[in-house]
Image 1 (cartoon, helix red, strand yellow):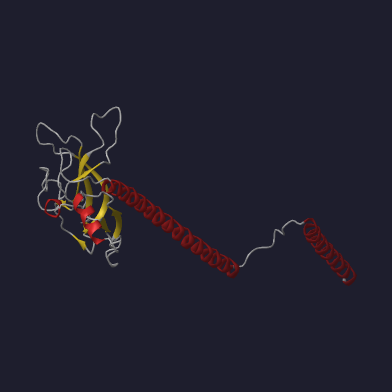
Image 2 (cartoon, one colour):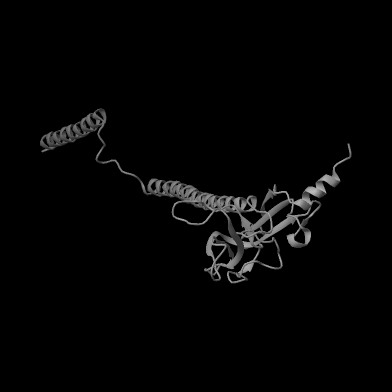
Length: 263
């Protein structure tokens, strides 16, 4: 019995050794072939660390993406505002540069108190007198000349923002058979204030009467103040353009000759 037991024990050891050798050789072959070991796996700690690192990376990517998106939207909004502002100031500059001599059939007086038109304050708060200017467009569809009457108003905005719109009212027919209310056009939105100033040769003033002074101002200044996008921020500085008046009246020519030094 002892010999038989020893024999079977020896056989069992040989079988176990062969199985171990086969498993070892299999793992060696898989490793050499670059294939994963079916018995290998991640531990719970490794999974937790990988999840935490992935979350941090995603948070950084999300923050950068939404920051770039906000910057893109802010930049485009600012560009749209600047383009609208430059377009409106270009229209105003052409109107002011074409101011005509006061008096005559098609050109009335430049007065901030008595207006030559019947517009009144129908379009909002008036910020300019009636300007008789040569900024009108001549084309084949319009029977009028380049002379037109222009006035600027500040009207309440249609939304609930509390801002105001700059309205340009143009009258092309200066010899109407009946009162002409003109054509109104909103050229700039989102304003808080606007003003037209006149230079008398010494300082800027907000009133002018060409009938009393028999002359035109030496320069015109147009100011607009844009509403702030953020109510918590301070009010923006006014944007202004200055247009010299190159029209010479008899009175201004006399004053210039009197101020010139004697030869």
